[in-house]
Length: 110
Ligand SMILES: [Zn+2]
Image (cartoon, rainbow, N blue to C red):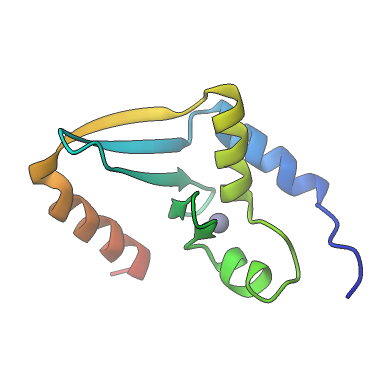
């Protein structure tokens, strides 16, 4: 395998997403559990920063196959974390199920 070079375009896109507050932390109260999504160009993706997972096609086809290190959503998360650019939205715990259901349906494209 050759060098995994970070594309310049990807970093620029990720920085723009972080700067425009597209990295969202959905925080559920009072449990404190949180869900992170990143609103990309075409869709909103679910990101798990601890496991370094993302639901986008780039992650599935390029990161998992070792063609690249990160997708731009995970990169945007990292930039937002370093610069405190998160958009934090609070929800009640009772909304958790319907929130996840809507998000997953959205991801499935239904
Ligand atoms: Zn992604």
